[in-house]
Length: 116
Length: 115
Image (cartoon, rainbow over all chains, first blue to last red; front, side, top):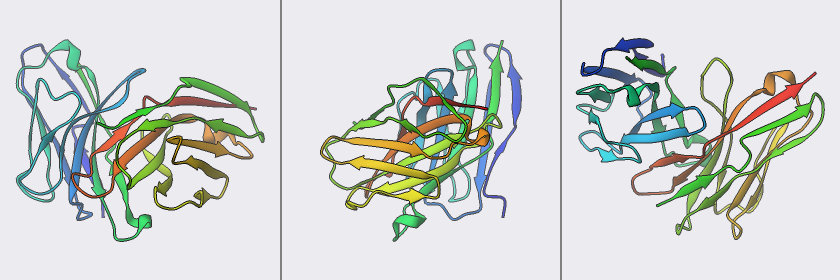
């Protein structure tokens, strides 16, 4: 049981390059999220998915696309990377349980992305 | 849209003492969850404590407790008997109950526990 797994952990891109950050969960979460974390800005929501096949924009969606093809996987794509997208990216899976004790979000280890 | 505000960018406390981190939020919803997450230097996000809005009783988890004031939309975290391992970023978060389950975070408070 790996929980939420993100790949890669580190990545350096050149401006204009594209890449996909992968996220997979084995905890049967309905909801999945992508955040970016920048100093002094906390975690800002990029996109989220309440269920398989659905996605919604968060606070900072520009420059990103996502795909939730199945319940396990939620990928984040940068089509043309820009230096402003240098950040730490977190994927999370969330469950709203019948009981409060089961309601929380579990996070991956993060991806440190640098765009030069 | 829901917003979460943490007004203390940084705080420090002496080991064994008590510290309170502040969080306020803005929402028109009546049913929701509130969370405090801890992020140590390892970067891992760890759930510290959660509170369901309809419950009047404040949540507690060992040395961690909250002061939930629904009318004031306030959700502070109290850490008792602070330990060096409590040094971390702390994030307050909000999730609406029902619907899209969008999870929104504050900007965080950097807590340093001094020996």
